[in-house]
Image (cartoon, rainbow, N blue to C red; front, side, top):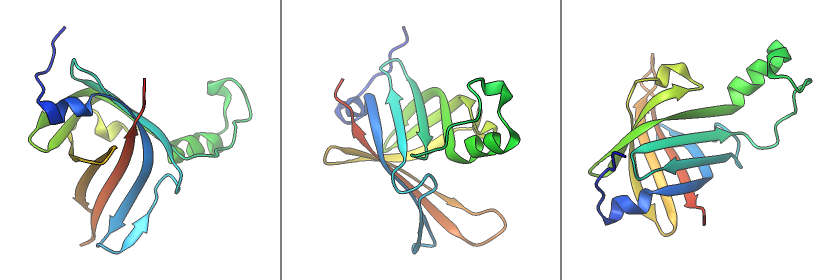
Length: 151
């Protein structure tokens, strides 16, 4: 087992965290909740350097069939619009955690490092990042607030 060396702050990151809030702030004023105001999700960090994250909109409709490969095109769109997950390895560099997705529901993330600033606010973990919106001058800050699960 290839264990990652951790300092105290980094050790605090280990475990399973429940999503409390996910918001995007555009141009420091407009707030959007991409998975609604009460999203469901978990993120997990292991001692050996693996991570996984799942996020979805709460109160989603059930599909018309129990067999995934028989769902309608509209149901496929609903799934794509309301669910995001990826898993892979991670590294901690200063105040950043960098995810290296190997599997992702959004394939553009695969093998592309996902850099997130991380900080602790009380019992919460806040992951954030900044990006520019392609084709415009708009700026966006992404904030995900997580609470550690007792396992």
